[in-house]
Image 1: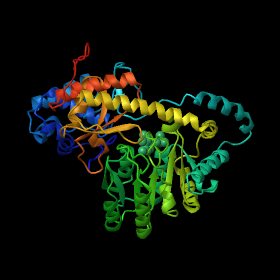
Image 2: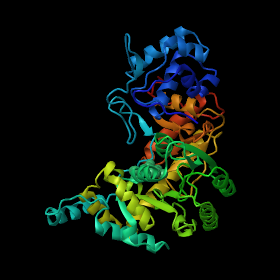
Image 3: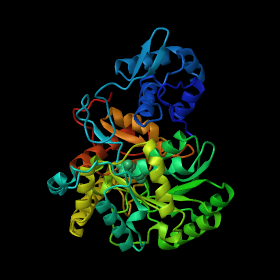
Image 4: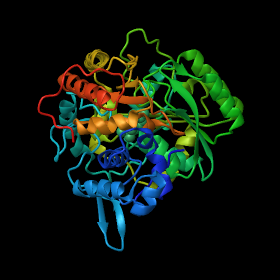
Length: 484
Ligand SMILES: Cc1ncc(COP(=O)(O)O)c(C=O)c1O
């Protein structure tokens, strides 16, 4: 299991050497490469700000390199502002102000940087008129206290109607509005999982969900998902043998592979959950982003194990991440328990944004059709460009979602991320999505940016692939872009 080192903690030389494993296997072991590999660990969240690093000698011994090399790498990181040191207090991770941050393109310190580390799309254009409509309705609510731990009744009704229309009859009493799907998962973990409990996850999985499981001191156990689909049999066995307290699944355009579980697979998983009485948290964040007409829509997984499934939805990908809204659909009893534990974390979601989301949910279907068509175009451009620039990779065309899960021509994902950053593209290596380590053969590449930026990113990634010594061919050198 890949540890995440958090604020205030200390990472030992041996642990850091383990995290840097892919760097050590490479043949380019200079101080610049070591500095780059540490930078990737910071950018993808495995070393968090405030983490104290081991002493230079300890790290040099653990890595089997000279102390001079480690000193030079740390000097480089200090110059970049990525680490800070004080005599007597050691050296720690200190992300500089204006440095690369998740979401968006370009950074204050590197405006040319293309950020493909997050799959965060811009807002739906229609959101501006939804805000106008919501704002005009606010005065009627000003006489109320504004605390709505369950959520705005009108919004809960609309969410319930959507599930009913998808073949899962739902009453508003079963719906709780949250501050995003990630918040919903945090509530579910609090309600159901204690230290040492096992949580079944797909491998690869959504990194923030993996981190949430670890933060609750639970143990993630994994079953493989590939772009070919789920190992349903493996899941059935794991549910029986590992006796997890909870399963976290993304059957609706799984992040990062983009695969969709068909109705037969859902039926089998639902039956296995019922046999083992395992609660299942289904993250449907990407459910609205079917990009192929031939995806045969299956009923929500909850339809196959009604009393055990907590379903989470999100406004972030369909409408806009800045709304910070999601929801939970659960059996009434579980929804009540979640509301009861909520005040320890927060007291409800903002009213204006809930009105905006209620407006958006009532928008005609054509609005989402246009959004899907836009992402389909972006996906197709990125796939074509990557296949041309990185011919040794396997670049699949996912049926939905917002990212490509590419298979590289070697276990070089972390090294490729370092090289790509030097060429102005931020990417998260496959290992960031690994529940139990590994996945260095893969890279997740979101296609949320505009088409010209995706083409540019593919060109830079082709160069990076050549630089790490894979067999990919870079079509042409990049003019005016220094390799740092
Ligand atoms: C699978 C998955 N779950 C949850 C989230 C976070 O959703 P929210 O913004 O609603 O918290 C994301 C965002 O990338 C995601 O991809």
